[in-house]
Length: 194
Ligand SMILES: Cc1cc2nc3c(=O)[nH]c(=O)nc-3n(C[C@H](O)[C@H](O)[C@H](O)COP(=O)(O)O)c2cc1C
Image (cartoon, rainbow, N blue to C red; front, side):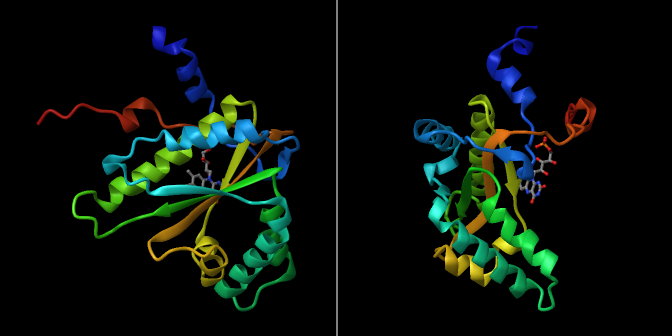
């Protein structure tokens, strides 16, 4: 079947997450990074609200990001052990490139539902992940409650409708985690007979 040999389909089927701790230099150069983010902006987007934006973490800002990640962990957990603080801080140093994906959701929009807007954010993320891999790199996504704290919201000067959804570490893979099993077709696809 032709779909199995189409390069786009092959790329889709080959996508997998990288290991954040095994992303070495080099990362994508400037032009490639822009092409990757443009792929994100290609996402389907009901109402064209553009409910997403990407921020590149400047190298010089990594220590500041580490401080914010530590402050965020302390905010979530009063009694926190040194290794956990280190695990929080190290996210600021994984991969030669780090992007953050910010969702901007207008929950009161008269026509476009919040879920439609979130789906556009997710599509933008998937497009970026696919473009990263198509460019010969690997990406590792990190998310969690640590992105929703006052420390992070203030540190990134988020607007009221904005949400820090994830960190995307990008680099040259020196190792891959084991491939994750994917659902069988019958788990995700059926016929509705009315
Ligand atoms: C929105 C989002 C957030 C994620 N957050 C994390 C995370 O915090 N930690 C992690 O190890 N993986 C995270 N992942 C990656 C998933 O764990 C991964 O996609 C899943 O295990 C399937 O593996 P695959 O990407 O190789 O197919 C995230 C993925 C998405 C889409």
